[in-house]
Image (cartoon, rainbow, N blue to C red; front, top):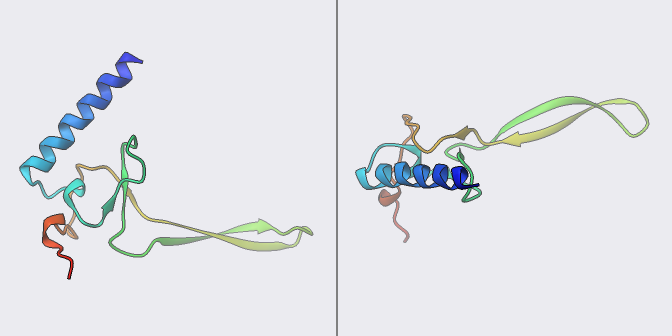
Length: 92
């Protein structure tokens, strides 16, 4: 349990450094969202989620399709060309 606490402390330290440096990384981007505080990654919500269709069997055994959608998962230190700093967005 102590090892897990040390890992969380190390992660928090690295993320704090990214934030303070103003790095062009996901953690500083307005489009990035960490759904749970304890999660190691988050989702990029720059674009709508990707929809996936997959074959399923219906209640009576007939073939059909199910769907689900996901935002891309990414780690806080990743950089991309869609970066928009959180500080650049203002409320009106």
